[in-house]
Length: 128
Image 1 (cartoon, rainbow, N blue to C red):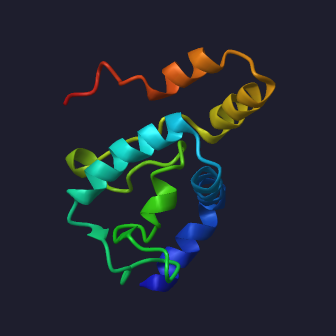
Image 2 (image 1 turned 180 degrees about the vertical axis):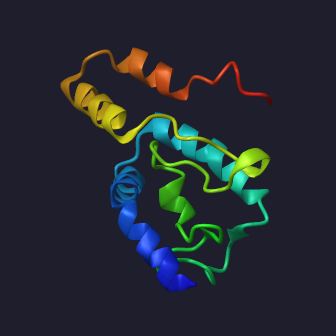
Image 3 (image 1 turned 45 degrees about the vertical axis):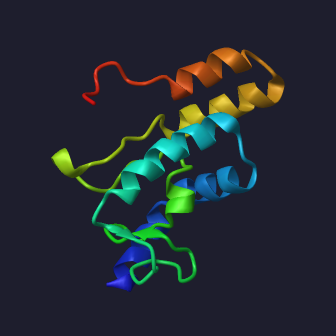
């Protein structure tokens, strides 16, 4: 079972890198998103606080559905909850290319307030 999760992780290296980077170099708007996602994960039966189903040992808590470390997955703006249908807890905020563009604009100091508000704005079509 773990080998499947490790192989799955290889196909998501960009998202893993993004989550690790965002965990190390914290930004308020990403922490806001991660906090909301973490609250949802804590209510989920797939949350593994002990790390028995983590793809990488020592990265708990993790999601038993995909094996990802929740410290990284919740901070990856291009990642989404691996569950499907009504069980899915949260969606990606943007795709990988959009996130690269956002970070580049933030580094250049272009429209920081507008970009931040756009990222953390709640989806009006999503039911609460």
